[in-house]
Length: 108
Image (cartoon, rainbow, N blue to C red; front, side, top):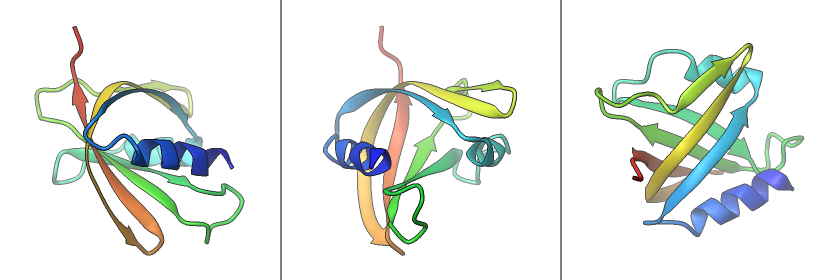
């Protein structure tokens, strides 16, 4: 499954910087389109198996400072997440989902 491959790859990138270019589906776009949570982050999830809600997966918590520009570009009913991110913490699972914490970084 594509989701499981993505989650496994990301889990192997702890303490590394990765480039992401991901189109989020409509339901996730609605979630990230709202204001960031009280910790200054937005969250999206990737299930290991898109067709099985019990398959587990990963919850990606993208932390932004107040001065950072959002790495999201909205086009109609989808959002494109793109940029460089440092994966600095992975923990869990909780209810079958790992939590992957990312921070946006600038690469010159």
